Length: 151
Image (cartoon, rainbow, N blue to C red):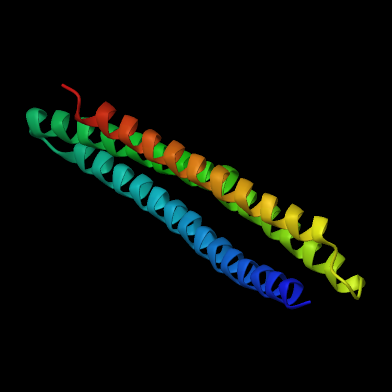
């Protein structure tokens, strides 16, 4: 019987960790959205400055800087969307699955082994998918950096 209590404790731990992860991911997405909005504001400000500048060379450089900042803002918005779609939503789904496992265990006085195995399998799939999503975000970041720093 202690095995089942141990598995129930593991589910509680997973649920707490997933809730923390989900709230952190939502904060990350919110931060990315704020950053994208700030970059758009910076781009507009630089563009306004370029339009009133009398020196044509400086105005052209400011226009180019404004365009670059606009592209960076677009990429930050895409990154926030990717974080929302791939990480936050998947974490929310897995959290729901873990909570469903807990509810199914709470209904019966004796926890069936197949339920615990199913929860472990779900968690392992989650870790695998999360690693895949993080590598996807990392590769996108590297591609974005390569785009901006290419000659």
